[in-house]
Image (cartoon, rainbow, N blue to C red):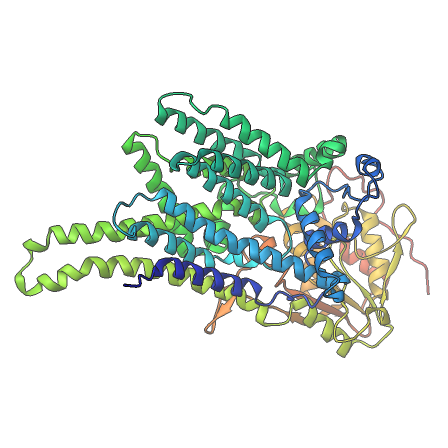
Length: 621
């Protein structure tokens, strides 16, 4: 009996294992300090929820301990991690800690993204027509797409956070896969239920998955068109009902606490469209819709070679479908890419992760184009082989495969390089951890520190050191309430300059764990002339502080460093930000009055702000 080994599925399994290993590498990149604010917020709600003691309590949204009362993201990721933690905690009591539960969440995120790799390969097998035994062409596209996704930089990075992005992309890909299966497959009921399951869980992960209704409706429309009748029309409402039921089970308080849910979702929508002004989205001032997302996706999110190949694949698919003038199953993923991309690309808020739901389909288009180019080159050169002198005929015949594999190798090698270069930031301590170690080693206990509001204070707990040995400078805000941290995102007024002039001479060090503020504030020169001048004085050493330490980690591999300082802030601000420590000069060169005059010199105040008298009353020591 002859044993037939199907090696292609084994390669896919190997790629999935490799993808999971890369995604699990360096999961504790922040040494348990929860530097990612979205992840931290989700974990706060994970540890806060509890099982209701009765149905009456479950239905009472105002008092139910199961209601997260947090709908910026869906409830499914919260419930999932809470359930996994509850199952594992009796066997691993250490999971009761916030830091360890965060690691469990990151492992779940890595598993979901690994699942997306497999789903993308399965989608390729459904979409690519190949009647040959073993379907080598379809498998080639599937394996190339999977290999590209294994090393896609942004997917590797987001797998290291327990935010909702990798979970969302998994269910988006599952839904599109089910839609294609509904059109291509023989078991419509099964595909219908799977599409409903995927859509419901995608909505329960993040409501931005709502446009999936377009490929879902398109799949049924194409199926009816192919049949020439509305036979099986009841499958569409069945799919929608399934989605609704799954959504209710995974996110019940979207219904039971509908008012709060609608308000929070509407707030997030207004924030994304720039209708609400919050400090952490001011970095997008002056950015160009679509172009900003495209630039970051091509240069950093997918990497240069994959990004260019994906765009070329998208254009090729558009040309192919227009030239064919026949409805194709490829319309389903294309509809998702165009509809979701058009909606999300128009937003004022342009975090790179917003475009992640497009990545699997763009990688698939890149893979399809690369395989198509390989076939085209081979066929084209083979057809002309007879026109070549017989002495060079053999070499000419090999030219097609060489060029095809060379093009594939360039795209794959470029993606591998950028993916591993980004992954390499986890081989070094986080810059905030390095900055904290420097503080413990160089600043004596009792030193007075300050930081920037909307960022985290330094130092953080590391190596058994307690940040409590230092004091954070405290001052009274405009309302007379004590607060810590420099309110640099606050409106520029003479009072802000007075506060800085009073506070800074009392501070031993200014800690800047990221460059979030000093990169975003200069984008609004009319709004922040004082604060921009403050940064100019600080960085030039004219504020009475000098740069004592700076910690920079960039994506790097084989001695080559990629300067990602021009990428979207979210690409570096969580896991490899630039951290700086400015230490006060001794003796300090300014009195508070002199410092005030230095800060306001030459400042053109915003017209919307009443400046009043440019004087401050400083007490005499």
